[in-house]
Image 1 (cartoon, rainbow, N blue to C red):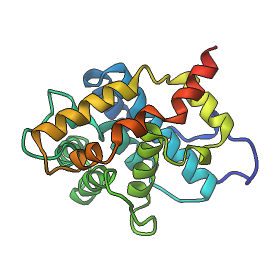
Image 2 (cartoon, helix red, strand yellow):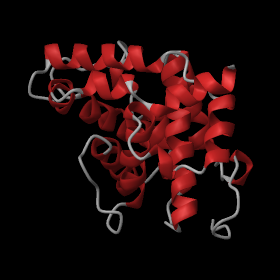
Image 3 (tube, rainbow, N blue to C red):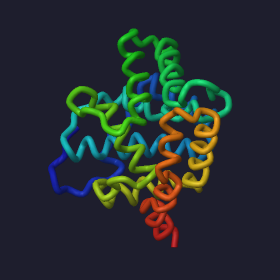
Length: 213
């Protein structure tokens, strides 16, 4: 999955896995996520895959893709859990999904682990490359953290193909709701540390607006 360093990277350079589990995960995300949340899930995979390719990080594309498609599913009302943090509830959804997909127990556990860890402050890339990449890519897409590390041509391609559709406002609402109902969860900690301001200042939104003008 490596390209020559320095070469322009575009969307067509990325591996989009097309296994039965990946197709089913996309179908699930499409059925239950809003258009903005669906595009966020797809972009989360693409930013992760692009960064992994650029940095020479070997990763399991199917595991990363499925985890990206399902990582925010517990924010939607059909899968919301009124006691568990959404990332933990999402991990359980991924475990059940993996069982239906015929994955062995260890692979189901890994999908749940990757989803839980996407909310961590940091993940060890040597121990969990998929968790590291999803934690990084979701931060890029939601709060704009380290977006300068996404190759410019890839940013433009992905934002054109999968527009943001007002994700920031929608996502702030999700986290505000989580924080009110689950005050000890990580989403609540994010909210109380200036999450809304960081989301509102995401440079990807400015870039998307420039691309539309």
